[in-house]
Image (cartoon, rainbow, N blue to C red; front, side, top):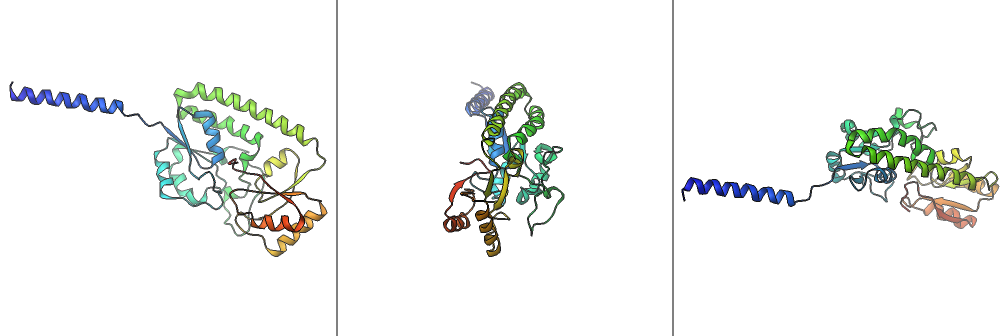
Amino acid sequence: MNKSYLILILAVLASLLLSSCQNDTPKSKPLALATIHPYELLLSELLEPQIEVKSIMPINSSPHTWSPNPSDLVLMEQADFILSNGFGLENPIRPQLRRHSTKRFQISEIKGIATLDHHHEGEAEHDDEVVDPHVWTAPRQIIKILDKLVPRLSQVYPDLADTIASRAKNLNLGLQELDSQIKTERAQFNEPGLITYHNSFAYFLRDYDIKLLGTIQSSPGQEPSAREMSDLGTTIRSNNVKAIFVEPQMSRHSADVVANEFGLQVLTLDPLGTQ
């Protein structure tokens, strides 16, 4: 056989083998990121299994105390879409989020989504940090988010547009049913009030007319002072409080101290939906 023909045949075979190997290698799914676990759950409802969904912040971490690893930033480079909250919640990765603004949808950009003041002493004041960032903790707020998020997702993933719309409709109905159920249960109580670990349920409490009696930590991650503990004790006695709520992402030491002193139950109320 002519040597040149043999080289050509080998080249063709090599090309066919390479093509076969590439076809056998499973392609990775498109990646959609959420900065926190609640939004990961929301994206999962709308996009999985066709799209891989991950959270940048680990499921058991608090956005108020978390710091990123290099691998977290690599995920942002790989993602097709990033859902963030804004309102100062993701300050440790603020520059990276801004760099990826073309593929990011930020909740704070939804007009009128956050209306409650929320500022901790000692924190830097930015324009997007003077309102309460915990908009995901109330069903009515999630309904507002869905209304703006779905069109954006349909632009990013046009082949899934019909699927996303259908899933969003079902999710919306479920949230409305949940809202009705909470209102029904709320009606069974006369002027209810809560003591939470930090003020992360303001939208939920507002929507269902529940009073926030006090918090263990006035600022997330900062243990209460002796004066704050004394004031909290006064609130507990005057309102006949039976329980206080802790967050699994935070140390419960101060809550245990208060509970032991006043004979209270310690219950978990997780703002990130990890439990």
